[in-house]
Length: 77
Length: 288
Image (cartoon, rainbow over all chains, first blue to last red; front, side):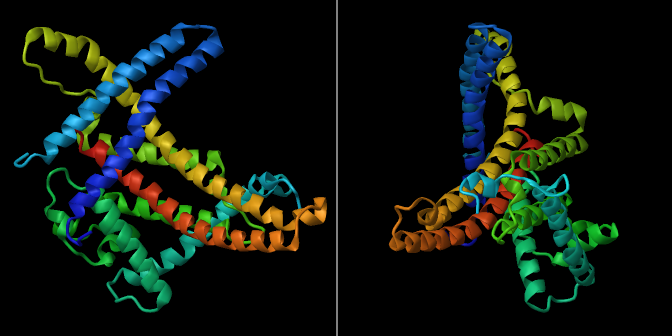
C-alpha cells in the first residue's frame, strides 16, 4: 500500500462499515418480526412483515448504497 | 481459583455492592483524564514533545486525528483539507482553552476529534485493564459498550442536526431515486422509498448496536478463551487426567493468547473509533 492514497484506504474501511450494516439491515427486521410473533402471538404476520421489510428494504437499500458508491467512483463525479 | 472460566470474566461485587467493573470504569476515566489533561496543557503552547510518554501520546492522538477522523469525517467532496498538516497544539489548544484555532487551519472533523480521542483512550484503558492480573475489562460487558455506542449515536445525530439542520437530518433518511418513466417513478415513490427510509432509520440503530456488540464480543470472547486455556493448566490438580506436559502447553498457549489479547485491546479501541468516525461522516455528509 502506497503512502499517499488515503482515499483508497478510506473507501476500503467505509465498505467494511457499510457491509456490516447492510447485513444487519436484512437480518434485523426478520429477527424483530420473529420476536414480535413470540411476544404478542402475531404469528405468522411478524415474520411475514419482517421478512418482506428485511428482504425488499434491505436489498433495495444495498442497491442504493452500491449505486451511490459507484457514482462517486466515476471520473468527474 | 474458580473452575468456571466465566467467573473470571463476568462482573461481580468487589467493595460492598459496588462491582469490579464499576470501580474499573471510574479508574479508567481517571487514568485517562489526569495524565492527558496535564500533558494537553503542556502541549497547548506548541512546545515540541519531550520524553517517551509525551511522544507516544502525540503519535497516538495524531494517528487518530489524521488517519481516522479527518479522512472519514471529512468535508464531503472537499478533500483540500485532508492533506494539510497542522501541529497537534492547534486542536488541543481549542479544546483545553475553548478558543478557536486559526480559522483557516481548522478542519471540519476537528470538532469531533476530542470526542474520538476520549473514546479511544477510554476504551483502550478499559481493554488494557483486562491484561492486568486480578482486574478485568469493563468493556467485556454489553451494558458498558451499549452506553459507549449510545454516546456515539447521540453525537452522530446531534452533530448531523447541528450541521444540516433538522430538515436536512430528516431528509438524510429519505433516499432520492431517479426513474425514467412514470410507472417506475410511482412504484419507487410509493413502495421502495418508504421501505428504504424505514430501513435507514433501523440502520441508524443497527450501526450503534453493531459497534457495541463488536467491542463486547471481541473482548468477552478473548477473555473467556484465555480463561479456558489457562484453566487447563490447573485442571489436573482438581480433576486429574492432565499431564505436566499439558500444563506447560496450556501456559505457553495462554502466554501466546495474552499477547494476542494485547493486540486486540488496541485493535478494538481503534476499530470502535474508526467505525464511529465513518458513521459520523456518513451522517454528516449524506448522499453526496
